[in-house]
Image (cartoon, rainbow, N blue to C red; front, side):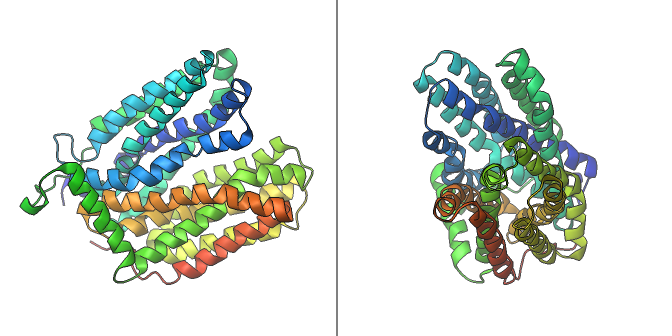
Length: 412
């Protein structure tokens, strides 16, 4: 086994800096851009919501294709790192420009900046995540994904606790610092994480890279719907549980305020407990999935989150809800940490990027479906319907994932 394919915890933490950088960007983007769009450009909440789904739309359109394209790439930097290098440079530049676009008070300039930033982030999102299974043997991928998710959580916390003093000093400062942190983190990955060497592409796979990558994407999609159904079932499970999670993430603060009479800041804090617990337990969740079985661990996590959300229907005060959501964060870690390794362990090393793109195709589709679906239910039946809708999606996911027969860690 070569050094680049032997499991190394320090190297995995180093790779996690790429995810830390991505998390810094998205946490800051989601925290401040909606405020800019409302205060400066006076857009409706509906329009702001549409703008804030641009990243998800790019993810659905581009990530499966870019994952397949990176699978076919051969360069001195490897097949993933060229995309990380180029995408992070442009993403950092456009991200830093966002507050200056706001100060110009030109909505067209703001929209161009946002679109180009989202496009640049899409360039390297699949490749940076696919690099984890590239350098990690199958039996260690759950542990490695736990470390990567932990590092992502650290990035988000840096924004939550460090963004306010920077923003209060100068509005553009958190964007400058955040962009540079993301770029530095990604450059660490490019410089210090070596990719395993791969054989040259077979003669029949040579030719126009874009056209050939489109064919690879078509072949990956064909894998989803043909033959044994484990890949289809795990992707449908991912769709279901991310719809359930995103609905809570989007509307829980409103539920706390309008249904429970809890201040919106307190509702956000309860979700903060959920996120911190997810981060703290991510590494342990990877070890549990590796040793107890990924499918079994995912089903346990889904059941925990489902029970917490159903129980929340009967809790109407802050601290009991906060404690319940601490438990829910652990359940979500069990689910989220072990799902990507299941998907990529259903294919060969040559197609890991494409299958990573499939994972994001279904998870990002959920992020587009969830807000309007949950919002429509709330409009029709009140905020309590949120705590029925989301657990129902987790319950469906439990039944669907039960049919998965592949994706466990391979030994050796």
